[in-house]
Image (cartoon, rainbow, N blue to C red; front, top):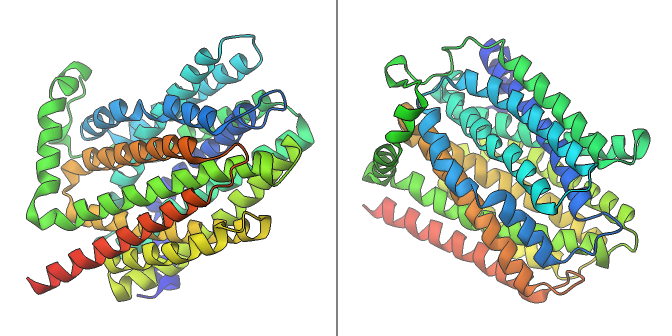
Amino acid sequence: MSVVPDLQVLLRLRDFRRLLFVRLLSQGADGVYQIALAAYVVFSPEKQTSATAIASAMAVLLLPYSLVGPFAGVLLDRWRRRQVFVYGNLVRALLASATAALMLSDVPDWLFYVSALCVTAVNRFILSGLSAALPRVVDEERLVIANSLSPTAGTLAATAGGGLAFAVRLVVADSDAAVVLLGAGLYLCGALAALRIPPELLGPETELLQPRLGTALTGTARDLVAGVRHLAAPSRRSAARALGAMSLMRFCYGALLVMVLMLCRYALSSDPDDGLALLGLALGISGAGFFAAAVLTPWAAGRLGPERWIVVCAAAAAVLEPTLGLPFATAPMLMAAFVLGLITQGAKIATDTIVQSSVDDGFRGRIFSVYDVLFNIAFVGAAAAAALILPPDGRSVTLVVTVAVIYAVVAAGMARERRMVGER
């Protein structure tokens, strides 16, 4: 597979470009919003943040996804996905504005978290819908390269949004509320960009639509069971296996993220602003790793197959993560950020491709919502585990070694399953 010609073909597809533009604006706004939250919760000079506090914040923001996720999938399989992008981004623009107002007010922390939760909850509809809609605008032959370009471009947009948030904070106003309002403006632009897509283009098929909310919610349990059965079928075992492996890798990523937050806040810098700047640099370098994954994965997955590429990614992480992480120094940490960006995004592209290729269009919304639920449970579990393990300054040999072992288990398990399939 030649990457550059396929990229040129994809970018000549008008509908793919329009869907990609919606993703870039939506995830760029996510990057702005998330950096503002991180600065407000973790790096405020008046706050003495601990790993437990970070884990608690992640739990408040992410655990409810386990409830929202399944409903998001059911509704995505009934509502026009284009309308979800329009109205979802409009709602997020309004809710983000409310978050900014709360930052400027003397209100209890729980009210701030509820506002932030609502913004990120709507995000589940947007991201799941973008993944489910992608096969509607590209052919199957170029689905791997589309999965490389589109989600990775979205991640890079989120990284750029984070950089923009830093710039606004440094140049325009030292105010997290101002940064959140910038994110609200980008959400509004995402809604306007979605209006350029024909309402019926992104699916699902007309006969699957049930616009009445009550009707859709009534059938949630039955449809979720059908979706799980669809995924559990022998012909889709590869999708279920890839989801399990990616969930474990997400656990590793979550644990390492909490450790990096604590290192930037306390161990590697003495000033909160310097720590926030170091975190921004680490995220930017990780974004470069995502870009490298977008370039490398189509070639690697084309030669090895998506499942073998996941094995390679997990095995590389098992070796490189402790090598670069155990010094607990700035330069190795930044190198690790690039490596983990490459490995995590490379495995995710392969997983997305396996799931999209194995799941029927009428079930994609539900399956990708289950995918998101698994991600969030793994991420919150990782934060909780890190809170138990990490010392106040973030330096923990136990955490680094444990994560390396999990990566090794994923690599060994995927390789073993692959051999068993080959023997059949």
